[in-house]
Length: 236
Picture 1 (spheres, rainbow, N blue to C red):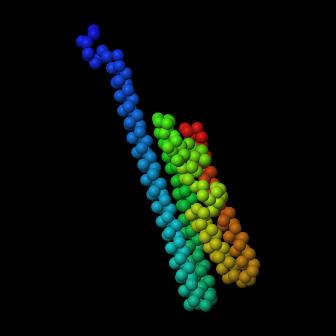
Picture 2 (picture 1 turned 90 degrees about the horizontal axis):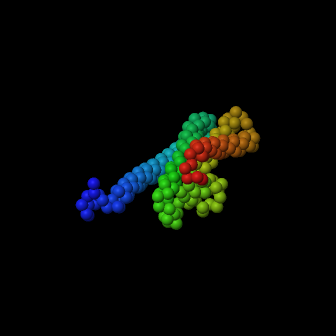
Picture 3 (picture 1 turned 135 degrees about the vertical axis):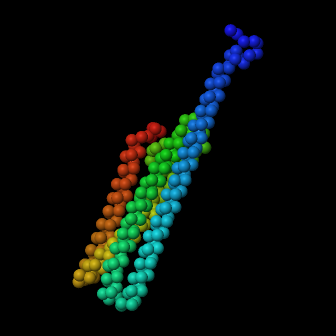
């Protein structure tokens, strides 16, 4: 039965208009969900970086306190047996704190890359809905390494290796290696080894400590990359 003239139910665009309204509502809901997730990732990144700075600061505080304490003990004991005993007691504690700090900093960096992957995926979803916005994005929107670097904007150091050497975990790693070397030299000299062989062994300990930390950093990063490679909706 047909309705009276002018009845909106009989208008040829009535059903199409209702469908358009539903699509617009669904689109708006999707954008809200994506934006909420985006802000959540940003907040998580902020918390991770705050923890990173706090952990590094705590380690440097412990190291500074230990250095001052060693200087005072050395002055009081004239670098005698009391100083050596104190150094053998306090340096392992500092090294443990440094090692734990390095591991956590590496984890924080990997977690941060994980959050950046997530935000790149969200940008990819934005561009699926509004492709014409692509020229206005200065950050990446895929899971490729180039897109991640583009999001970080880390081009000033010239190469990934140069960038890796100036990061906070790398700085802590070198300090840890030096503490391990000093601890080894002090321990070897305590067992009557002469200065020159002890220093050579200390250099070997330094290189070994650096190699172990570099291996751990690479292993942890590759584990995250394998996890990301399993699910890449952006197509690389």
